Image 1: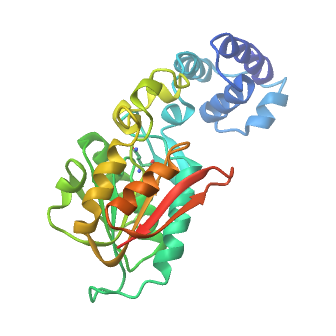
Image 2 (image 1 turned 180 degrees about the vertical axis):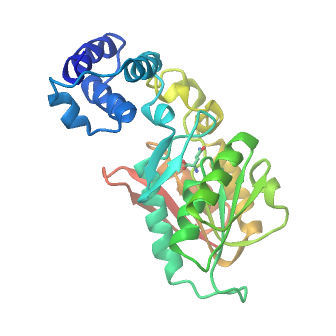
Image 3 (image 1 turned 90 degrees about the vertical axis):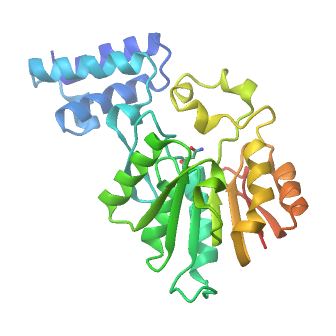
Length: 283
Ligand code: GLN
């Protein structure tokens, strides 16, 4: 069996299982197994694959046909130029969240401390894989970054990412702010679960493989924003920044929640598709 033929056959099977971009995925799976380039494999009508390669490829194909996301099969996802390890205990980091990091870093680079420390104290609430916390810690070396999550399994992934990437991050387990007691921060960043509960069951099959607790934002999708906005003033230092990623058409309501909580300078920023995606406010 040559790579070109195997990819063609596997792509048909993946397609029948409803996998979008079946041919691309078949090539990437074989690239993962062989360590060769996907495009070279597609064009290779000569080389015979070994029995071990075929077996490993078949195992991955079966999982992909069951609609496991490629990122869980490969156990990694690039984010802000670095590779993060992921598993089904954490949400797969998205480009929209890179936008949140970019905006937060823009604000925090100009930070002049109120705490006497060299950089800002930053909290990543609902840290999941730790992509936000680790990115901020590495991009702003003076920052004191804390990452909190309810899920011990997610925290284990985040801790592993911080260690592997050499980021200094403090981790805390608990339900939102309960994880950090009375602590105050110069910035609170969060990409909380924001999909309305009823929509969670109709998501794309791959997204339904991600942790429900990382997706489900309660009946109206806004449960976490309500709780975060309400509690934020008690956890922000003077002029502290709150920045949250939001779901589709949530901008007005989340902006209103921030204002009701007494926060100022509320602004909404679009993502790279022009969709309102990040709400910013400050104390
Ligand atoms: N902060 C993580 C991310 O942005 C996890 C978010 C979540 O679990 N809702 O990917």
